[in-house]
Image (cartoon, rainbow, N blue to C red; front, side):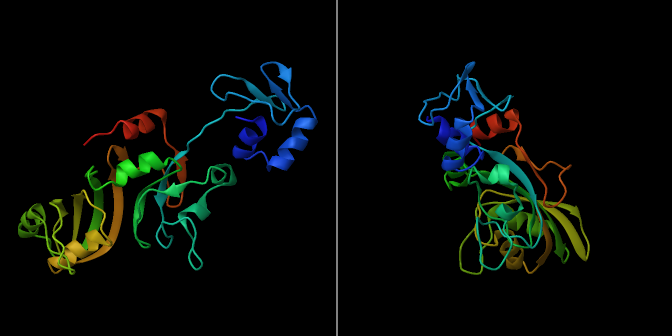
Length: 238
């Protein structure tokens, strides 16, 4: 990889700006000053130092966000703020995107990455990756609902969902539940409860496959995944 491309990809400026940076002698590779923008560097083996600090190259970025309500799961939108708008410039240079979607008013775990292969694996219907939601329901959730979800319920468009694992945490006029599903149909959780005559008034995603929401993240905050979390995702098999 050309040194100017590597540094530009990491957000140290445009290719033109990086070339000017190189000319100043600010870049040192394997203990030698490099001014040639076409110099070939192996990010995995060569030691690149810029202005006295080691440059760590990474091809992919993996971010966990606690998505806030009112923000949409998209890379750009003409009307609403997106989850990508919440990212810092250091992360934006990797051109990441949300893996799947959470409804505009839904909170919780959202994976943001530029690893297209991993995103495909996690979203593939063939993988049946489980996702756990916490929800507050308007209406008394019953054991009959638990059994209905276990069999799959018919949505308003006639689609029969795959089985869902419904757990009642608190029954009452406003019930609290946890629901695990392996699909990601449009407004699926809300439509599943509509199918049994109830309404979701609060929804938060807690897990996706092996990835669990970091409870230390405030709404709108995010962090990079740990090496262990990345490994769990990449090697995940249900």
